[in-house]
Length: 170
Length: 170
Length: 170
Picture 1: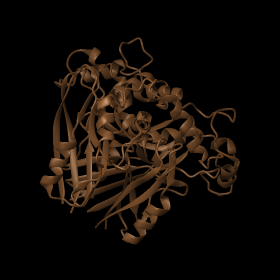
Picture 2 (picture 1 turned 90 degrees about the vertical axis):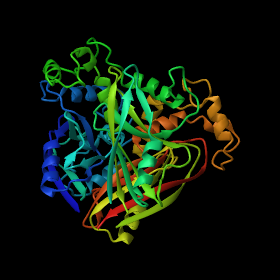
Picture 3 (picture 1 turned 90 degrees about the horizontal axis):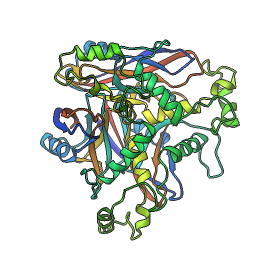
């Protein structure tokens, strides 16, 4: 038996956006009735990732959990923001800007500054587009504090993002 | 056909613990009789990861393989240890410490110092909770020197950890 | 229904090799006729990874896409090349060199210098051996600009590499 579903998640466009989607994935699993098998959660966007991390009860003034604040700080050091054209990033080149501007896609507005997101692409490659979780006796094997997060590393654009979920099993 | 199984692995509590679980996963695959499909190996703990890496024949005096020694050194540089409260880590906040201390879980003893493991959480997010390996003609596609490692990045607590394995195929 | 297939990809042996294999994976999916399910793309080599990243229209003089140039630069900083024995890398030790030299494997020629690839091993562990993509209504859920790349992080040897693909679904 195979179930596919998706979530629509809103990115704030100001900083890295983290969505705790654990309850949504559990709900889709329960509705499917699948008892044993595999659950894959996957981003179709190349600046987003899915990770498995602990839920933390403390938040900074932005509303980000403390482990998210820590991860953002470390990423700013090892994969720094592409905040202007005066960085070491080659991405995006002129041909690529022309391509993206010519797509007439509402996700790519006529402002090349929003395409300066090379950092988000590299970060998403490090963390991967998907996470795969095992289902046993109707439950995701994620322990008592484990949570599933959809991350949008792109900090330039407020917009809706899609997260795909597939459950396969019996 | 779907098989689920699990391993219990002991973390040393003194440094990052690496378990080569290749033989265990191969044994579970052989017992299943599955010839073609997918094998997913997954940690339910948010400070552990599963990776695919070469087995090395040289060990340091701790018994760690040389690639593990190299990985530990690089991680100490880019995701440094949270050895005291006087670090840049925000994790764990007071509310989270209160939550973990109130769980009455034998895995969370009454010593908040053992919760200073923000580095282990961030590291585990980088490497991911799972690895997915393809099965073809009864064999994992891992080459002649490829091995599967379960890593516990938490260096604060000696304890048993669980590793889940799911094999789906025909 | 389960389909397994593989690609043979040639590494240049001079720098990190990136192969855009999106068209190949799409072709294998179309031939299978599978409409809903999962596609796993996996490297059996411990110095190679599979990632999901945007295709870029601009290339440097080596022919590498700009996001690849940016990723290479960042990796050279955080996981530096093992260019000689005078680095911080412990890998490979003498026992491991003896083992690899004794394999009589055409992939391991009689030149220990080519085994100085600890950086490639660590990098491949960070990015993971596989990527898992969801199939819905006959299509991979990779958006309009998303591409699948097979990366050989080993810069020491020109040789053929294998990439495994498995599609499971109905």
